[in-house]
Amino acid sequence: MTSANKSVVITAGHCVKINGTFHKNWVFVPGYDRGERPNGTWPATTLLTTPQWDSGENMNYDVAAAVVAPQGGRSLTDVVGGQGVAFNQPRGRQMYAFGYPAAAPFDGSKLVYCSGRAFDDFLNSDDQGLNCTMTGGSSGGPWFSSFTDGTGSGLLNSVNSFKYGFADFWMFGPYFGPEAQAVYNAAQNTSLT
Image (cartoon, rainbow, N blue to C red; front, side, top):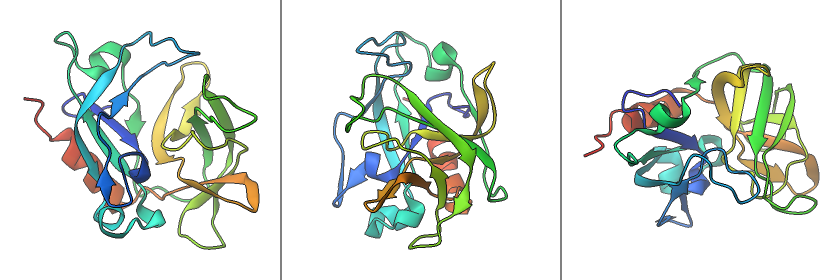
């Protein structure tokens, strides 16, 4: 995504830290398709998340950022470009959610998307919901508002976070408010050296 250091990946908090421990050997593989890695493998040098996820894994703040190391002297956005990001936006917007679902009927090998108007979770969180049948493995995938099919560009405005077991036709993602913006700002200002 666009960032001052050209090296930020936004994802779900549980994709970088779960059960009190940050993940090890975290990598980003842009453009992954059926085993192919056309744009390389980008190892993270820094993992960041919201204080609310860090201290208590609060689903309302399931947002994180990874800062990836340059490869061959080039930054991530120099190689693959970057999407914009939007914070503190009105709720109920048209969204496009992307991910690599791995649980049946999917196998994690290809990019899948859902689209529709987001709605407020009326059950147990402050998150937004989307009609979406993606399964486990899609976590951390981006939700874009102002998405254009022809160019594939949009504004990152949430990420795939969780589903309720009794409602597998909905996907939920955290609202990108000041907490998500703080994670993004910390990540884009992280030195790459």
